[in-house]
Image (tube, rainbow, N blue to C red):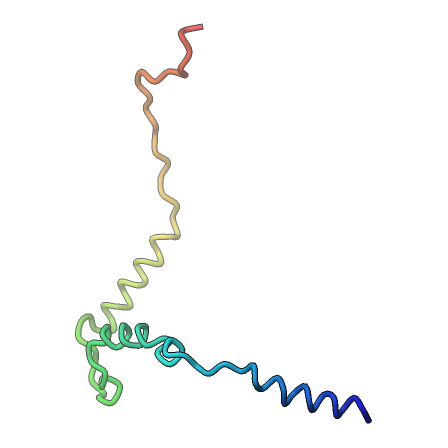
Length: 92
């Protein structure tokens, strides 16, 4: 019986340790949201069913396919030519 009362008193007393949000907390993340909004060309683009400006779907797909195929074949080994490069010793 004594433990629940002590827990209730401890809970009530611990509310005095609560800190209120500061001005920093109120504006936390505002710079990130502002930077994201500045990078959007057309915020209402989702409401209009027109294609995006730039490449059409077929051209975009073929460029992505070419990009993916570029990783299929490893690059040819490069021949290294060392002229006059020593090991740092005095000829011994």
